[in-house]
Length: 446
Image (cartoon, rainbow, N blue to C red; front, top):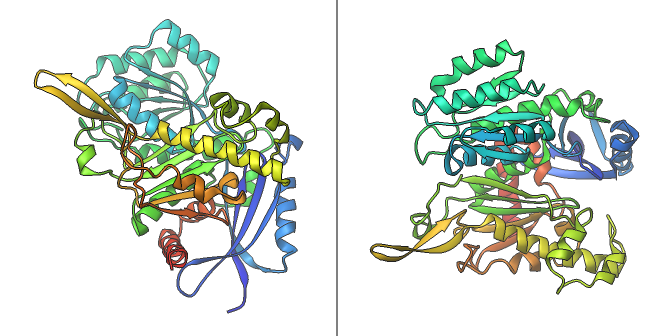
């Protein structure tokens, strides 16, 4: 079978644009044939410059590209959607809405619970969000505060679309309210339709739609739609979708994407019955957290300030976006280790002790990671620098104060950095992506 690129995936990152060429094999898996990289050209006002440079590098590998090649695009270069989230109670709808927003690649700038006050409304004005998310109430439950919040948000006259994902009994009333104010209005299923029931997937899909419209009009990104006839999705959303398909195929997983500006953590697991029975709040099966202060280049200073013991200040002089020397690589490795250790503690469940009338009892707040079967490293820092596997193995210590993966958890490094690409292809080819993951795991564990 001749090597011909039938699928191109394009990732427009904040610093690097990456193009992958795939062929669909006879076994139904995606074979990676070639990759091309170039600096992202958003600063030049046209992302096509970086894309064409990356494509030229791929073409230089002398792999033929099919005339009818299918092109898929994901991007994080525009910084994601600034979102504010407004629910009824933080432990229920506000938190559920926040989980869905993060899973879709949005940047949650503000979360409120209960009736909005003047201070909150002023803060929303300052944030000037790209999207406002209103939730609240189980289906056919609380109405008064949700309606009042809708009225207050409408009065702000912010020209951002509003997504409603609350009490389904109020949809028509709230739709009419925002229509009168000329505000774009989108509806998603209630993120908390019943007590202790999280329903985040429909909301994630709606936020992806808003992202697709928004990013095409972001500065320097106006030509993005010219590359593909398909929906453009946020890179973190693509990685989360890939993580879900990996877990469905190979078992519960925890995926780290350590980048120059942020560290994203994705977990797909229901946890262990021994611990989840002690949870005081429900957790989504698929969860994403983004740590905006943990990046190995743009936010390296933040990591240094978190841990002075591991890094000396003079070592920061070796900081490079793409490390090449031994000193540069050693610094990036140290930064990466701190980012992984810090981000997993923020993502994982915490074991707490509470005193009750019947004595001391353990409770859990957060995501139980003890049932995770695979820990996977993707992104530049973990895949391009030596020691990534050792870093991920170091957090597999089991349950203690934090509910971390067990010591026998298997660690994989996505050395070709395919997770976001496969997550983008999974929009149309989920079964083929699952086959690709299955083959990868079989090869890595032989």
